[in-house]
Length: 431
Length: 178
Image (cartoon, rainbow over all chains, first blue to last red; front, side, top):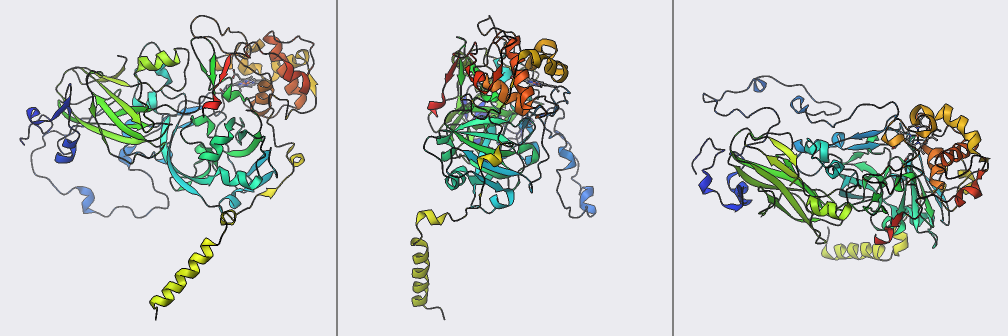
């Protein structure tokens, strides 16, 4: 293989698998990443230094020693949530988004997990916090945090996505945004906790009970109704996130975790589970988190998150520094199961090639995909399309809008299009 | 020395212990402390559309205006006109052209939700600071501002669940799908 400035490959040697430069996914395995370009938001990689390689300065002196709580490298300071500005009329309210374009693998570091609060993060003292189970049960019960830690637990990797994620794409004009600003309300972690069925069994659920009102201990006392069947299936009272006690922003000391469903129902700072006959019709399952169709009827309890994928690099607001081969990578997930397949297109959906799945493909978790792509300096539109284990295929934006209408703003999961111009600039576009 | 015989014996013993446990006893941790519903009367604030969970007391819109003006109008403006998209509490028409304005009057299917939400989450800068009486009053006021009840109508546990919201038939419950 001849090395060229063109990203390390002679373009005619590449095994093309779809239009506009998509290359067989196995090429990455064969050649490693050495010859690949990386899309950058600002800087370009030092192209042709020449000269001798020297021992760096940090190899000539000892560094600082151990620390009691680790922090990221000072060179990765750009990995930040977009926290927004405080709003005095909405104290503690708002959302922060994960920097998806800078992350790899499938696990979101706890400090970068997206947030959505309705009344800020309460300072819950675990020694005083109580979890109550009441309503239609044989015996109402109260659990302390310390006692809950003694129960057998399960650990599962699950994504969490706010149902408002990507909602800007319902708009008529494509927002000039990044993977983070458009899609950053999705994250993924290993959640460890007690199967809710264990605690319900202890209280004894009466046969009339069909729903559970879950209530948080924040200022808003966030409330959501969970159908009993789901609660008994895979819902847990989560106490740990990626091995450490759940972060305050995620519900410390405990949250409900409802796999695959819109994030808001995984009630944080969980303090009450009330068994009821009917749904409680909380404000956040009537006024909000309902989907109005074009005929003006609103769909209620549209819980599962759709089959979805997204190219995180290269992505919106990045630029390609030179022609050559790039690694196209992204994430895929589904509320209905695991990810079976991700296809990528570089010509706006005219032709597709299978991407390689780099990660585990577990139930209701993020999966990571990649495919090499030769950018020849022309226009292009990068897209990805996921298929899940239930056979659901991610719809195009048009197909999604045809189903959901234009006055809905939750549960967007249409195909994302990143347009590339001849300058290598990447923008969110509609096709 | 550990012979094959002792090993076999140990194995038999271990499996006897485990296999003899009935499924119900395998889950032995039961640490919940019993508590009664009356002990939860200040703690359980869930008020549902079936009338469950509402406190005693009552209120009228007339009385609610004063509460609203002093404790809500800073963020929701006079008469609930709102200072931003999500603080507008009145007006709107779900059948209007384009993206309809969704408010208590144009969108909410149940009046119980209003009481439930205000009691637990509002005012946003001092949640749960209203008395039960004040919550009834201000709920009545918002229903009045949306032309749903009269200014003098007494709202209490019973009458609140009977309030007919304009968009009550506007929802399709998809919970059976899950």
